[in-house]
Length: 93
Image 1 (tube, rainbow, N blue to C red):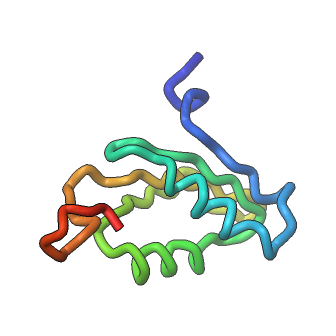
Image 2 (cartoon, helix red, strand yellow):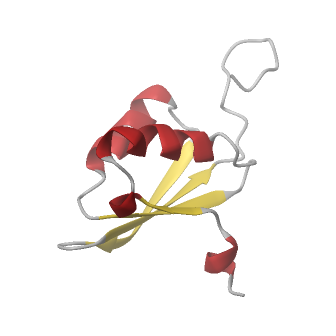
Image 3 (tube, one colour):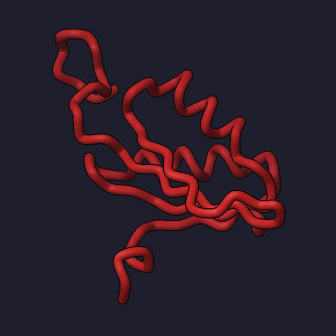
């Protein structure tokens, strides 16, 4: 099994549109620091990228593996830089 096959993945082409982002964020929430997941889509996932940057700045890396026009593949990694929480509580909320 290759490294790519061992990563969690979701093919949103098979998921109803209103369930896509909740499923992706649910899977992202299970990733440990340094872990990554793969997403396959039938459209440019730019809105998802923007949502990650806005709601979780500095927490996730984004690597486009394939950029359309029919299929987009993205690898999203949870960064291990400890920037998930900027307060002093020590939580990763």
